[in-house]
Image (cartoon, rainbow, N blue to C red; front, side):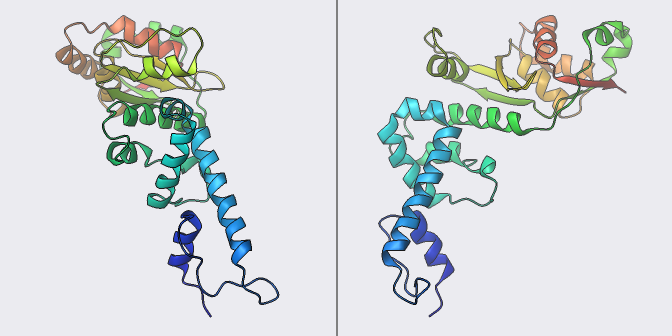
Length: 249
């Protein structure tokens, strides 16, 4: 008997599902108990991958609740790639619609931040432009230049204090979050990715640069979005995070 592959995948990810018909061991005997062991191992491994990928989400909802959440997630969003670095990409959307979590508005954005940190970690390396090279450019040349940012750069914008929430649950002695929107730049200045809070207008500036705007146009967009836009403050973050890898026409 041929085993239906769709039923097999569904049964592997759902501990309540019936064992698929047609399974047998190497001696032709029904493989019921062996399938149960295999199913449990798959579920445990994928749950552990989600725990590693979303440690702050796990802490926010609690260990037992996270395991229940992970079980539901596995059934809705099974892995689509053998590379586990991609597993969990649907977590923000899942948290926004999953009945036990959908009323907790900040959870999806915290998950987006954790995904951005993971993506930044796996991004390609790049050598940053030195601060001296940036300072040596005449202002008129800089305004018309385009800045290429490192592959590790990610931008996460939220109406919630997502970085403060993340730090409060991931770092010792972090301050309690205050209710305010936060824009976060994630980059990998050294070996590990780092999230950094952007000043007012910083997200508009970074987003404009990422989409190919000139330095001058990015400044205009940021200034239009925030009357408190402070270019030196934004450049300080970009230089500190070693994000700028090329400046040219």
